[in-house]
Every structure is written in C-alpha cells, then in structure tokens.
Length: 231
Image (tube, rainbow, N blue to C red; front, side):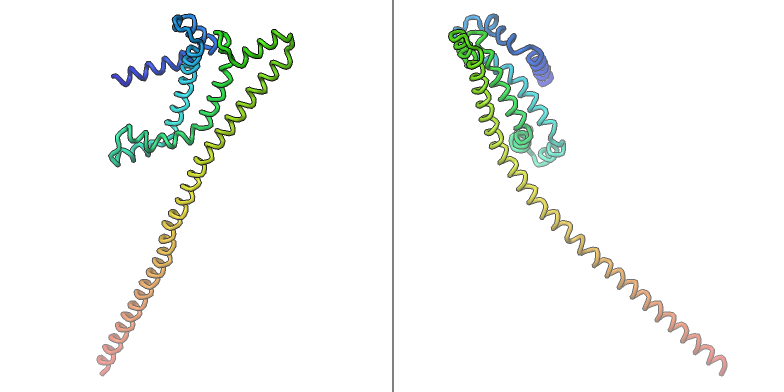
C-alpha cells in the first residue's frame, strides 16, 4: 500500500512538472511558494532542480525497464535483495545506457537557466540585455551571449563523450571475454560429433562382421548336416 502511494505521488509530480513551462514554474516558486526567500539564486536553483528531476526520473525509469527481467531473477536466486540488485547489477548498466540522455538533459538545463533573469538573477542573458540597453546595439551582445552558451554546451558534450568511452571499453572487454568462452564451449561439441560418428561406424562394422560370421556358421552347419544325411 505504501509503495502504491509513493508511486502515485511520483506519477502526479512528473505529470505536473512536465506539463507546466519552466518559466511559469520559476515564477510560481518566486511569487507563490518561496515568497519569503530573499536570495533569488536559491529560488532559481530549487525551481530548476524540481523541473529537471522529473525528466531525470523518466530517463532512469526507461533505463530500468531496458534491463532484462532475467537479471533480476538471477540476482534473487543468488540471494541478493532489491537494494543490492539495484546497486551492484542494475545501476551500472543503467548508467551506461542512459548516459547520452542524461548529458542531453544537463545541456537542456544549462540553456533553460537563461530565463532566470525573469526573477532578477544576474545571469548571462541579463548581462547581455543590460549591455544592449546601454550601447543600443542588438547584434553584438546577443551574439556574444549565444556564442558563450554554445561554447559551454560544446564543453559539456566533450565531457559526456569522454565519460561514455570507459563504458564502451568495458562493454567491448566483456564481449571479447565472452567470445572465447563461447568458442571453447562450442569446440568440444564440434570434436564430439566426429567421435560419435566414428563410434557409430565402428558399431555398425562390428554388427556387420558378427552377422557375416553367424551366416557362415549356419551355412557350415547346414552343409555338415546334408553330408551326414547322404552318408
């Protein structure tokens, strides 16, 4: 019952957060929920954190659903509880599978922070708007802000690619270690087939020889019997 209640609360939370624009959420946190909070940066961090947590939860849910149920059953057969199964078996695979989606969500969160100036946070966008109001130039301040965000996104993208390489190396190592094992498993089967064929051939040859000896013996006995009858 408690698990169903928590599951229902999580579904409502994810549905509400994903259905409301981030700017509206930011203003609700600033003007409605955290009215007494004087630090605008704290309000922005809380608002963006709650917004991004819903998307990250869905990413991890998709990663957990991508794991085969046989691994859960195998962990239970080894005596691992649910927490140990998630920590030692499921989560390492989830990290490898969901790393691109997590990097994409982090980049999206970085770009969404550009609307924090709506509540008075002195971010990069607000700095560009102030320069535009002082110089009366629209091109250079906005292009500079765009280039800075582009540089930050490229750095994050390179970091995500660097973090994905060890996971790919581990996967390649596991695949290379499993291949000789499968080959070694198939090798005895390949050698057993000719041996079985040779054994079967020897048995058939033995049966044929035994049949010929029996036929010769019976023919000899019939010949002796006819000779005695003639005498």
